[in-house]
Amino acid sequence: MNIPSSIVTMLAGIILTIVSYWFGQHNGLMPQAASEEAPWVDGLFNTMMTIATGLFLLVQGIIIISVFKYRRRPGDETDGPPIEGNIPLEILWTAIPATIVLGLGIYSFEVYNSMGGLDPMASHDPKTMHAEVRHSGAAIAAPLPGATETPEASDAEQVALGVGASPGTQGRDADVSVNVLGLQFAWIFTYPDSGVTSGELHLPAGKEAKLTIAASDVIHALWIPQFRLKQDAIPGRDTELRFVPKDVGTYPVVCAELCGAYHGGMKAQVVVEEPEVFEAWLQSQIAAQQSGDDRAIALNTDSLSEAEYLQPYADEIGVNAQGLGQLHPPQAEGSHKIHHHI
Image 1 (cartoon, rainbow, N blue to C red):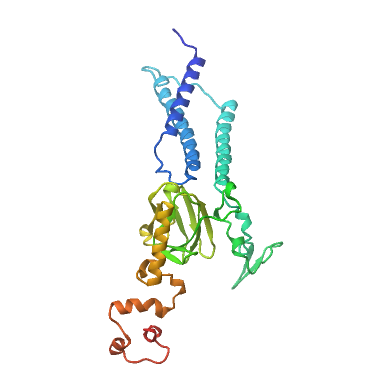
Image 2: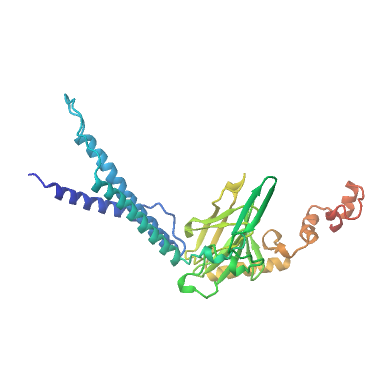
């Protein structure tokens, strides 16, 4: 029985759609979704996987069918038909990718907005609108016509890169605020409300967290794969991430920007705990800070002088001013700052 080619094509299209959709939605390539924002990103990724799977099967299927169906027969020395140009076909293969790209662009923008994506144009960065003119032996930098120089921009104006409050939490402060500093080659997390500084990021589950991210040397990128969040840390420019961790657990924090020779070792971890466990951890760090029992984790180094910062280590290794005096002859006033502090 000869089945009309239109029916065969329709059946092939149905099978192709079902297989592509199933694989796209069950690919298992993404890690655990540990934040409330993660499902939005997963939905976008699965959609792209569905489309990619369909295109892959379609193209590879046509190639395989053509190899067998239109292969050269034994004894056939004739040329193939001289086919040149096919306007409807060219319109079709141009329109399909354009429609896919446009649809994915709109979808990804909606995901970004739903997560609270900030508008970069709202930063009012006074340092970007410059024209540079170079002459022989001289260089002149000047504002572009119409650009305004703002000597001092407020912090609120400069934080326009990253993910801010979602539409449902606009105008409301986050439950937990953490300042994140990236430096070669470590992440430092500071809780401004308590002054606690830690090498780990601790967050309460189910509470909205706000990370204000900065860099002290080069560009880094804070990436937490289980939260589906990544944001650059830029020297001289704060960026922001707001999200809600939902699953208790420990997840890796990775630098996703090649930042130097030891970039691969720039790792930390985020610990998501029940709110009462998080509060207990925070209070223990505050108590350790007040008692000075945990200098490596709980000290707020920003408030310490150089002598206060070095004093505990001098006591540990038994170094004092008398001992140093035996190693080095007395020097002129102000020539060895650390010596005098110790």
